[in-house]
Amino acid sequence: MAYGPRVALKDCTFDVEQNTIVSIVGPSGCGKSTLLWAMSGLRDLTEGEIFLDGTKIKGPHPDIGLVFQEPNLLPWRNLMDNILFPFEIRREKPDMDWIGHLLERCGLVGFERNFPRELSGGMQQRASIVRALSLRPSVLLMDEPFGALDAFIREEMNRLVEEIWLETKTTIVFITHSIEEAIFLSDRVLVMANRPGRVQQDLAVDFARPRSMQVMASKAAFDLSNTIKAGIYGFDPSVNMAAE
Image 1 (cartoon, one colour):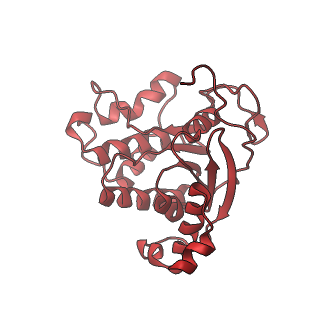
Image 2 (cartoon, helix red, strand yellow):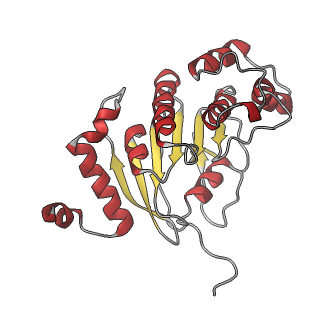
Image 3 (tube, one colour):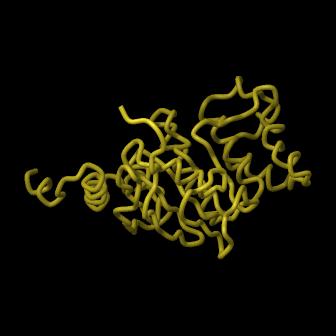
Protein backbone atom coordinates (compact mmCIF):
# COMPACT_ATOMS: atom_id res chain seq x y z
CA MET A 1 0.00 0.00 0.00
CA ALA A 2 1.40 3.39 -1.03
CA TYR A 3 1.58 6.27 1.42
CA GLY A 4 3.09 9.74 1.37
CA PRO A 5 2.97 12.63 -1.10
CA ARG A 6 1.71 12.04 -4.62
CA VAL A 7 1.86 14.12 -7.77
CA ALA A 8 -1.75 15.08 -8.56
CA LEU A 9 -1.11 17.15 -11.71
CA LYS A 10 1.77 17.23 -14.18
CA ASP A 11 2.21 19.00 -17.53
CA CYS A 12 -1.37 20.24 -17.20
CA THR A 13 -1.32 23.25 -19.52
CA PHE A 14 -4.27 24.95 -21.18
CA ASP A 15 -5.92 28.34 -21.76
CA VAL A 16 -9.52 29.35 -21.17
CA GLU A 17 -10.80 32.04 -23.50
CA GLN A 18 -12.84 34.87 -22.05
CA ASN A 19 -16.64 34.53 -22.19
CA THR A 20 -16.58 30.78 -22.87
CA ILE A 21 -17.65 27.67 -20.97
CA VAL A 22 -14.97 25.00 -20.65
CA SER A 23 -15.77 21.66 -19.02
CA ILE A 24 -13.17 19.29 -17.59
CA VAL A 25 -13.91 15.56 -17.48
CA GLY A 26 -11.82 12.54 -16.58
CA PRO A 27 -11.69 9.43 -14.40
CA SER A 28 -12.17 9.70 -10.64
CA GLY A 29 -8.98 10.69 -8.87
CA CYS A 30 -7.35 12.32 -11.91
CA GLY A 31 -7.03 15.70 -10.18
CA LYS A 32 -10.01 17.64 -11.58
CA SER A 33 -11.04 19.17 -8.25
CA THR A 34 -7.40 19.76 -7.27
CA LEU A 35 -6.97 21.70 -10.51
CA LEU A 36 -10.09 23.79 -9.92
CA TRP A 37 -9.12 24.63 -6.35
CA ALA A 38 -5.68 25.67 -7.56
CA MET A 39 -7.33 27.91 -10.18
CA SER A 40 -9.41 29.51 -7.42
CA GLY A 41 -6.30 30.35 -5.42
CA LEU A 42 -7.43 28.21 -2.49
CA ARG A 43 -4.75 25.54 -3.02
CA ASP A 44 -1.05 26.15 -3.62
CA LEU A 45 0.86 24.47 -6.42
CA THR A 46 4.27 22.88 -5.85
CA GLU A 47 5.07 23.62 -9.50
CA GLY A 48 3.54 25.71 -12.24
CA GLU A 49 1.60 28.97 -12.38
CA ILE A 50 -1.97 30.11 -13.00
CA PHE A 51 -2.77 33.51 -14.48
CA LEU A 52 -5.94 35.57 -14.84
CA ASP A 53 -5.63 38.32 -17.46
CA GLY A 54 -1.88 38.26 -17.05
CA THR A 55 -1.93 38.43 -13.24
CA LYS A 56 -0.56 35.46 -11.35
CA ILE A 57 -3.04 33.84 -8.95
CA LYS A 58 -1.42 33.75 -5.51
CA GLY A 59 -4.54 33.35 -3.37
CA PRO A 60 -8.31 33.97 -3.39
CA HIS A 61 -9.14 36.51 -6.10
CA PRO A 62 -12.11 38.91 -6.08
CA ASP A 63 -12.81 38.24 -9.77
CA ILE A 64 -13.08 34.47 -9.29
CA GLY A 65 -16.28 32.90 -7.98
CA LEU A 66 -16.59 29.30 -6.85
CA VAL A 67 -19.58 26.95 -6.70
CA PHE A 68 -18.85 23.80 -4.70
CA GLN A 69 -20.13 20.24 -5.01
CA GLU A 70 -22.38 20.96 -2.03
CA PRO A 71 -24.32 24.24 -1.64
CA ASN A 72 -22.50 25.02 1.65
CA LEU A 73 -25.28 27.29 2.89
CA LEU A 74 -25.06 28.27 6.55
CA PRO A 75 -27.99 26.44 8.19
CA TRP A 76 -28.69 29.22 10.73
CA ARG A 77 -29.03 31.90 8.05
CA ASN A 78 -31.95 32.21 5.63
CA LEU A 79 -31.46 32.22 1.87
CA MET A 80 -31.03 35.98 1.52
CA ASP A 81 -28.66 36.21 4.46
CA ASN A 82 -26.58 33.42 2.93
CA ILE A 83 -26.37 35.34 -0.34
CA LEU A 84 -25.36 38.53 1.47
CA PHE A 85 -22.73 36.80 3.62
CA PRO A 86 -19.79 37.38 1.20
CA PHE A 87 -20.61 41.10 1.15
CA GLU A 88 -20.46 41.17 4.94
CA ILE A 89 -17.03 39.55 4.86
CA ARG A 90 -15.78 42.03 2.25
CA ARG A 91 -17.59 44.94 3.92
CA GLU A 92 -19.08 45.86 0.57
CA LYS A 93 -22.54 47.13 -0.28
CA PRO A 94 -24.52 44.56 -2.29
CA ASP A 95 -26.29 45.45 -5.52
CA MET A 96 -29.79 44.45 -4.45
CA ASP A 97 -31.25 45.06 -7.91
CA TRP A 98 -28.77 42.60 -9.41
CA ILE A 99 -29.38 40.07 -6.63
CA GLY A 100 -33.12 40.41 -7.13
CA HIS A 101 -32.69 39.79 -10.85
CA LEU A 102 -30.62 36.66 -10.18
CA LEU A 103 -33.20 35.38 -7.70
CA GLU A 104 -35.90 35.84 -10.33
CA ARG A 105 -33.84 34.10 -13.03
CA CYS A 106 -33.20 31.18 -10.68
CA GLY A 107 -36.83 30.86 -9.56
CA LEU A 108 -36.10 31.76 -5.93
CA VAL A 109 -38.29 34.85 -5.52
CA GLY A 110 -40.52 34.31 -2.50
CA PHE A 111 -38.02 32.04 -0.73
CA GLU A 112 -35.66 34.75 0.51
CA ARG A 113 -36.57 34.16 4.17
CA ASN A 114 -36.55 30.37 4.02
CA PHE A 115 -33.76 28.45 5.73
CA PRO A 116 -31.72 25.83 3.85
CA ARG A 117 -33.55 22.95 5.53
CA GLU A 118 -36.78 24.28 4.00
CA LEU A 119 -35.40 24.20 0.44
CA SER A 120 -34.94 21.32 -1.98
CA GLY A 121 -31.45 20.29 -3.08
CA GLY A 122 -31.93 21.98 -6.44
CA MET A 123 -33.07 25.22 -4.79
CA GLN A 124 -30.10 25.18 -2.45
CA GLN A 125 -27.71 24.78 -5.36
CA ARG A 126 -29.46 27.58 -7.25
CA ALA A 127 -28.97 29.75 -4.17
CA SER A 128 -25.25 28.97 -4.19
CA ILE A 129 -25.09 30.04 -7.85
CA VAL A 130 -26.85 33.31 -7.01
CA ARG A 131 -24.41 33.86 -4.14
CA ALA A 132 -21.41 33.36 -6.44
CA LEU A 133 -22.78 35.51 -9.27
CA SER A 134 -23.99 38.28 -6.96
CA LEU A 135 -20.36 39.45 -6.69
CA ARG A 136 -20.17 39.74 -10.52
CA PRO A 137 -17.02 37.62 -10.94
CA SER A 138 -15.33 37.57 -14.32
CA VAL A 139 -14.65 33.84 -13.87
CA LEU A 140 -16.93 31.25 -12.27
CA LEU A 141 -15.44 27.90 -11.25
CA MET A 142 -17.99 25.11 -10.72
CA ASP A 143 -16.87 21.88 -9.04
CA GLU A 144 -19.39 19.22 -10.08
CA PRO A 145 -22.25 21.27 -8.62
CA PHE A 146 -25.11 19.05 -9.83
CA GLY A 147 -23.71 15.58 -9.13
CA ALA A 148 -26.07 14.95 -6.20
CA LEU A 149 -29.24 15.96 -8.10
CA ASP A 150 -31.57 13.60 -9.96
CA ALA A 151 -31.46 13.49 -13.75
CA PHE A 152 -34.46 15.74 -14.35
CA ILE A 153 -33.33 18.47 -11.96
CA ARG A 154 -29.81 18.20 -13.36
CA GLU A 155 -31.05 18.90 -16.90
CA GLU A 156 -33.02 21.86 -15.56
CA MET A 157 -29.89 23.21 -13.86
CA ASN A 158 -27.86 22.77 -17.06
CA ARG A 159 -30.37 24.85 -18.99
CA LEU A 160 -30.31 27.46 -16.22
CA VAL A 161 -26.50 27.72 -16.34
CA GLU A 162 -26.62 28.23 -20.11
CA GLU A 163 -29.36 30.86 -19.80
CA ILE A 164 -27.40 32.79 -17.19
CA TRP A 165 -24.23 32.50 -19.27
CA LEU A 166 -26.01 33.84 -22.36
CA GLU A 167 -27.01 36.87 -20.30
CA THR A 168 -23.80 37.50 -18.35
CA LYS A 169 -21.11 35.87 -20.58
CA THR A 170 -19.20 35.02 -17.39
CA THR A 171 -16.24 32.77 -18.16
CA ILE A 172 -17.04 29.35 -16.65
CA VAL A 173 -14.82 26.37 -15.91
CA PHE A 174 -17.04 23.40 -15.09
CA ILE A 175 -15.92 20.11 -13.51
CA THR A 176 -18.23 17.17 -14.14
CA HIS A 177 -18.32 13.38 -14.31
CA SER A 178 -21.16 13.58 -16.85
CA ILE A 179 -19.99 13.57 -20.46
CA GLU A 180 -23.49 14.56 -21.62
CA GLU A 181 -23.50 17.53 -19.24
CA ALA A 182 -20.08 18.63 -20.51
CA ILE A 183 -21.18 18.46 -24.14
CA PHE A 184 -24.46 20.29 -23.53
CA LEU A 185 -22.91 23.17 -21.61
CA SER A 186 -19.52 23.74 -23.15
CA ASP A 187 -17.67 25.47 -25.93
CA ARG A 188 -14.72 23.13 -25.23
CA VAL A 189 -14.28 19.89 -23.31
CA LEU A 190 -10.91 19.07 -21.78
CA VAL A 191 -10.36 15.36 -21.11
CA MET A 192 -7.85 14.56 -18.38
CA ALA A 193 -5.68 11.47 -18.12
CA ASN A 194 -5.19 9.76 -14.78
CA ARG A 195 -2.38 10.03 -12.21
CA PRO A 196 -0.78 12.39 -12.59
CA GLY A 197 -3.58 14.42 -14.12
CA ARG A 198 -2.88 16.08 -17.45
CA VAL A 199 -4.95 17.30 -20.38
CA GLN A 200 -4.90 14.64 -23.12
CA GLN A 201 -7.75 15.94 -25.31
CA ASP A 202 -9.00 19.46 -26.05
CA LEU A 203 -12.25 19.12 -28.00
CA ALA A 204 -14.39 21.87 -29.50
CA VAL A 205 -18.19 21.73 -29.12
CA ASP A 206 -19.72 23.53 -32.10
CA PHE A 207 -23.46 23.27 -31.44
CA ALA A 208 -25.34 26.57 -31.80
CA ARG A 209 -26.75 28.31 -28.73
CA PRO A 210 -29.18 28.32 -27.09
CA ARG A 211 -29.16 24.54 -27.03
CA SER A 212 -32.07 22.19 -26.54
CA MET A 213 -31.80 18.71 -25.07
CA GLN A 214 -32.59 17.39 -28.56
CA VAL A 215 -29.01 18.17 -29.58
CA MET A 216 -27.89 15.32 -27.32
CA ALA A 217 -29.76 12.85 -29.56
CA SER A 218 -27.81 13.94 -32.65
CA LYS A 219 -25.11 11.85 -34.32
CA ALA A 220 -22.60 14.67 -33.78
CA ALA A 221 -23.21 14.56 -30.02
CA PHE A 222 -22.95 10.77 -30.03
CA ASP A 223 -19.66 10.86 -31.93
CA LEU A 224 -18.23 13.50 -29.59
CA SER A 225 -19.32 11.52 -26.55
CA ASN A 226 -17.69 8.41 -28.01
CA THR A 227 -14.45 10.32 -28.61
CA ILE A 228 -14.41 11.54 -25.00
CA LYS A 229 -15.08 8.04 -23.68
CA ALA A 230 -12.29 6.68 -25.85
CA GLY A 231 -9.92 9.19 -24.28
CA ILE A 232 -10.98 8.26 -20.76
CA TYR A 233 -11.18 4.48 -21.18
CA GLY A 234 -8.48 4.03 -23.78
CA PHE A 235 -10.23 2.39 -26.72
CA ASP A 236 -10.20 3.22 -30.43
CA PRO A 237 -13.53 4.96 -31.18
CA SER A 238 -13.41 4.11 -34.89
CA VAL A 239 -13.12 0.41 -34.08
CA ASN A 240 -15.94 0.64 -31.56
CA MET A 241 -18.32 2.38 -33.98
CA ALA A 242 -17.41 0.00 -36.80
CA ALA A 243 -18.30 -2.95 -34.55
CA GLU A 244 -21.73 -1.45 -33.99
